[in-house]
Image (tube, rainbow, N blue to C red; front, top):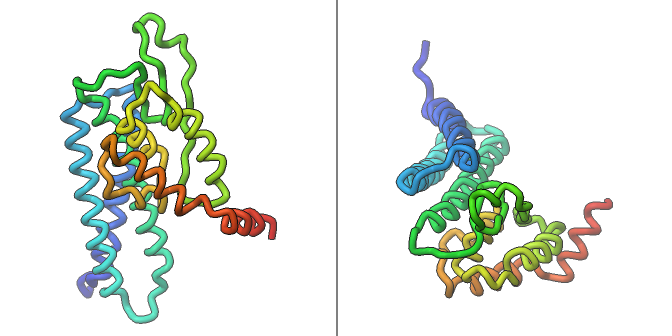
Length: 217
């Protein structure tokens, strides 16, 4: 039996990594019931960053090693799915990292389900309703709804600092929209910059019109 080719090795390895990433995402999403410590959050952030770097290298090598005539569309789709999962993981972990800093004092607390809950005495906390934050993956058809909901929930919330608003913004994004802000750190000064970047990219009246029309044809 001939040894597996480089293409086969990379394909098998990426499938295994995808399983681990799915487990990692599940672990982060269970934070509300099984809280992660600050040390765990930092460790998982490092793990997610390593997987992202590995995924980029794997995809480049896979493209080179693929036999002539190979349909690369399934590989491209799988690669994008991995990046989207890592975007969600890292954004949620960044939110938890911000709130695990004891120097931060605010009247709201985060959850990995994109909910903002006013901070009160523990005996009263369960009685308070959750405010679900919107999500946006870069689909123009969803921009106006996301923009209006996020503005009402977070952008105009005077109880939040701009750094906290940016962290919530990043945790609400996925796909292309998330990757736009990948290099921006969660600081007060960067929130306005990040919001303007999204506005300039997606708040285009002409493109919004055509994106809506396409849904009906």
